[in-house]
Length: 600
View 1 (cartoon, rainbow, N blue to C red):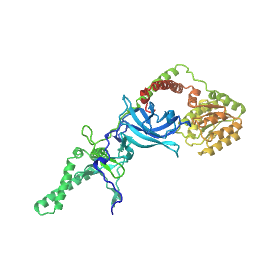
View 2: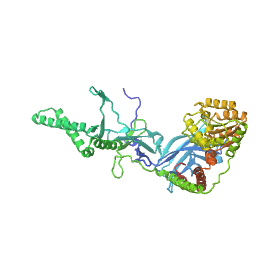
View 3: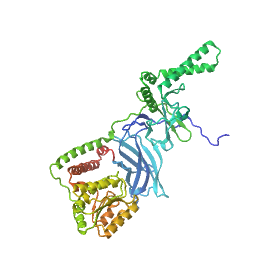
View 4: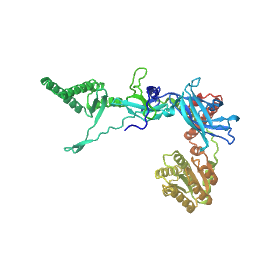
């Protein structure tokens, strides 16, 4: 049956193969090869009027990045359909959003033509590769939408790339994920082999064990259809080679004595000889000949298998998505090498600033330890911690207990660790005043640690007999049952002072409202910023932000803890200096300092 619709294309109408390069991906663990299609591009995604007077447009854009290049600046030139200039924007800080001030004559414009060019870091001029887009207003959505995207007059919205790869163990190229032409890089994941799987081949009736036919591929020859693989044990491989050699000798004798032998025997002999030559001349076979035992032999074979599996050749297929396509030749670099093997890197070169900050922190820590062990270091008074003695003393005078609620965080969370360190200091105070301390928990992993901390604190204060393990108990692992249990304890025991220290969520207000109604003094501290407003409203004292983490050093005056606290303060000075320096340099469009940081 004839096709109802078809098209005829000549070679000039086929998609063009993009200029691409293949290289080892930098700053990885040796599990990626990077295929680069060019330098970064920027393109508009949508735009909308920022005010009712239509004086300004807010334009969102995206960047097709290439990790080999760093985008420093962008230039947007906006014109009407007839080429009249509407405005120009130089984006000095690439935050994927710009604003365009519209001249009075163009405040109701419905069609914009945009040309976008990129300036790379350390380059003086903008790149010659320019992205062109028409941005048209949509009356239904009340915003501008980008139309087709052109790069140097080529419509790349209808062009797609497939990266074809082949390892040394493959017989043909296989395709990867398809991407549009805006993609600047393709990461080919070359994973490390973590297991060798083969199906069950049978059962040994004597030993009653399951048999596996495990073979390790070493090399392939696609042109001649040859494959070199080995079993797990050297003895089996030697036996296979002897059988192959015996079969070759047998066929040679048979063909020599019978010239009229079939072509099938001749073809079998040629194939066996080709396999023999392919295997015995392979570097893996020659190296394995020197192995002293089975383990060394297998180690050599696995090494060559790993090199074969993770070495790849690359081709690129360009298509319009409608059956027209062109495939490139196998890529080779300037040295003529077409096989690429990923190399692991010891250090991520984008983290130099992180290394510098770490060394700076170590220097400041050494200085802080030196200072804190020689003199009393000033720590700013924190009202909530200053009142701990008074609040526990009030509970002692009233003859009512103190309760410490560590939240419902797990032992692996930093806030729970900080909470337990504060618990150690508060339990020393309750031991000193001989006041009952109630400590409910919602995590059975935190419970034994809290019991040990309180027991040690009571022993250090010389009151081990006052420690009551039954007052440190598990309530519930669930959020609101735990909240109900704590509220019940607050009412029944008429708790005089309550400390909320740790991670809290929606139960925070329910807990503190109950304590407030009972007239308890409440001191709260958490790193959950969503709950801090509720604690401030209902509690007598609230530790905000880093005051929570500074509490243990503040209460204990331990030189090691205080030195860590002072180190953070010193480091903050450098952070503030870096922020001010970056702000000043950015004001003058000097962005080198910004790009020096791994995260912007």
